[in-house]
Image (cartoon, rainbow, N blue to C red):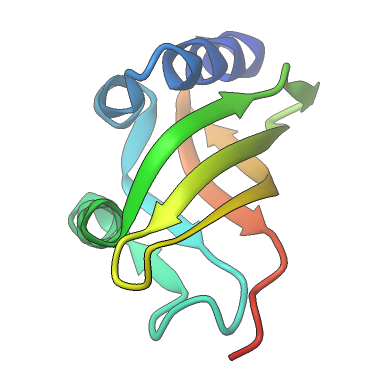
Length: 123
């Protein structure tokens, strides 16, 4: 798959609620996933096992009311997407809307790196 095809699939599957398919078909087993500093105790997840744990933490802590991924912007082996989310933080019950920019690197037909950019709430 080309970078454009991977980007298009990721957007389509995210927008249809089929994020699991992205991890199964588009991601390298050696994926590196990076969150902003201060967003979590371990901002870098390496490999599908650590990425899966990050996803489990998200599901335990947030109820997602809606999410939307923008059309991708592709440049060579890179693409970016804007994600908009309406969520409720389960422990506090606080509902909020947020947006983030995600940047992906593709090598050998798989996503090998993703990095998320968003404002981290101050505590």
